[in-house]
Length: 206
Image (cartoon, rainbow, N blue to C red; front, side, top):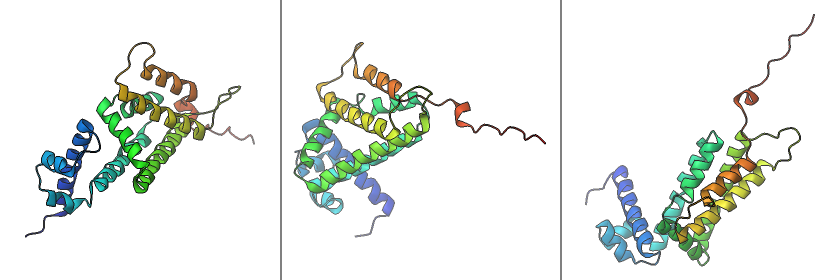
């Protein structure tokens, strides 16, 4: 049989992963490879060309999520940070949140998956710390947490929002989005552009 190009192979792999995501979100992480293949419209043999097992496909989905986490590094304002955190947590469907919880649970029994999940949490913490570092400053007379501590708080809060998302959307004055906005406002004081620019040196007197 003729070999397919690397680009075609990558597209086919992504197609299988998307089918797996949809099956997991709709019916839970314990769906069979047969169900994934039916959704993708491929043979079981074709599935195993790209993944050695269903767990390998789950791990690939977890690894792929790191690309989403990396996009946090592009944020340049506290408002953008809040919007991104909402998209990452409360704006997700209950099915998507449930899939993440099921993946965490499955990771407790699968060391390789658990390591990937922990790596994603560490990556989120690190990128949030970098974003907070670029946005925050300590105002005179104001006690503030270090960027690393703020990054840790936002990471833990985000994971909690994902977990609570399995129960469905919560709206109203005490919605998670309102709490998240208040938390970021309390922890992150955005530096004004003038504060970021170095001040010109005073002219020396002769």
